Length: 152
Length: 438
Image (tube, chains in turn orange, red):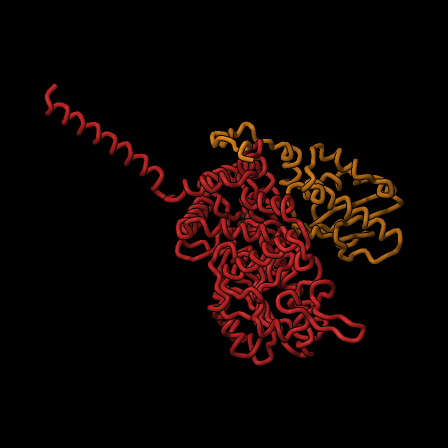
């Protein structure tokens, strides 16, 4: 095993080698200036989710009229990835037919994010997706929509 | 050349050498007397030395890295000694038993206990769950179980669940504004109604070292059983269960260089003798008939099933390794490193230390913090790009975070192999966080 020992000179790290791919301009912009971030006082359906690992919290509010999403918003707090993803998703869903939620796939959100999500951050990225799809599912099945359900 | 000239030249040379030597010493000695010692220790840890990308491992509070001697001890057991303990009559099995029991004796002496008071478990969590089950029948409706707000979930949930099952009351000792345990509140909360006091020795979030002897004293005074979570403390503080006089203590091997899956439940002999086992199976019985059963002697009464033999042996090796280090120097280095890190971190704009941050506070090398610019997850992510391994989240202490109204924190922690260079790289990474999220 001693053959694996490496000289300490390898400790010199240059900042150019730092990979900040996850924090691209678009993500940081949505994090710092989130779109649709407010609580709706009345809406067709809403749902609250928590990521128990990091404490991120998100509530999505969706207002529907004539089968169209006429208003959508979110509230909560969390890391740059979870907040940017909520902002991007709300922006994407706004003014779309509510049926879009029926077929919404994680791939859509990944595409909106446009970055490689490391395994440790998948839950952060997907919190908005889980919240909004669960809100819709509960709405369709007529369940109470504001229950706390942990993200698996 | 006259003798005189030679003499003068020699004088000059000596003078110069002295000056150079002094200068070098100054560089090393200014703040970190023992940084070289830590650098040397680091070389004993293959993972820290072998990674392709430089690694600045600052998450030893979660689990420590393992020195080569410990990894070798575990492998050597499987290569040369593997057999089940306390069963076979062949030499191989006898050797396995001897090594396993020697490891127990080592752990016992490490905490100044007797061998029969050291029950091997899979770790702190298993130990605390087990002692909670062992004490269950003694808890009655309306009794009180006291814990602190700074507990790790493993010393919180077993008691919360026990209280729920027995309709007992769970009482919580708060912390002060200075993040230390509120001892005055503890004095009021621990009463004649208290049956169990479960308290951590060192907080895995705040880094504070609790006045554990005082807490144990309060429990003793009212006749309550004291259970001490020493998961963090065992790695940093010399432990003497006789002196502390606690009833139970739990800790894990993996937070002090040993492999995962091996831990200890210490219990006073008289208590262990009087309590019933909660796990049943092989090894823990002397005699089992259809009608009767007699439990095995201590500590085997509480070790049902085949234990983690290799883990225990490697745990023994880890203790040998730790005891072979110059104790005072290592502790001094960790104190200096913690002070330096606290100073440097607070120079980074927006950093707030969640825990005592003054220069004079005696604390463990565990530092939780938040940054104005970024969420702890994002801090950890950016640190990772520098090879700096830090933790972000609740650190399994959600009640504490909730009470502080903080959704999450980032955490760095140090151990015997961490150097000034590790802290410096952390600071570089934290400055980068501010750059990215400016």
